[in-house]
Length: 305
Image (cartoon, rainbow, N blue to C red; front, side, top):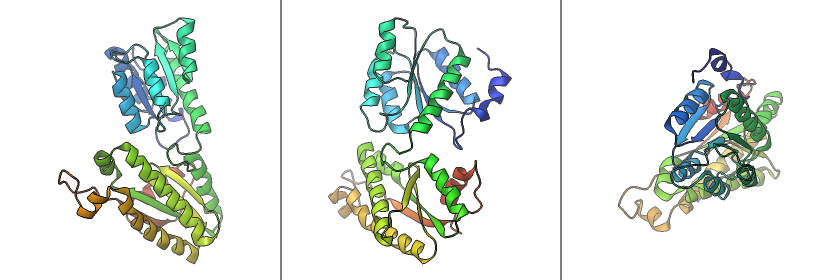
């Protein structure tokens, strides 16, 4: 199937996010998988592919896609089992799933919907219809998912509102916190420990910000390893920054097995992956919608000014 210029030109209008949504295609038929990957990539989505059910579960756990397009008939475990495993993991329990399958029986459709799939499409399918169903599912998910599934912190939609609020009110300031070294840490100690660290950091940010000023402050999660805090401007901001730096670096040792931290190496003799915390004041006055989130990301990743 060819990709029309009209489809490609519509890429920018698929959703309102600054960053492209990530779709995981789970399909063992090579030609269908290649067509879907090329098609959704041409629309501006980030696309990953798995041809086996268990590979799909492992990949989804690692990359946390925004949506899964899932075939039922797979070489190892079937799509129903894949969906059940995704629903049983905190990282993917809310990820929308669209079944795409040859199975047309009512019982198959009901089984898929009972497992929590947001849609069920039978083959052969109209690719334009699939496109709109994917877009609509992503929009519904974006509206519904206001909190990060791991930390429970407000995510991009609410952070965008805070950017606008801080930009309008000079008595407010925004602090950015970025964790470095987490991919290496996850490779060494596994994603469960990785997620425990993210939850611990979120708790430290919330508690430290509140304790420092005696009031509850906005703490949000911009990306997996990037956080923001809204504080009163002026000296109060630097009080929060100083205490965050102290608390996070004090807590770092508790993220590792005690023996590894004491030795500085793992049991195999390799050096432990070190975590770092970049805490900085961010000037959001020049950030404008709809590019505010990307500007914030760049400000957190760039050199200090």
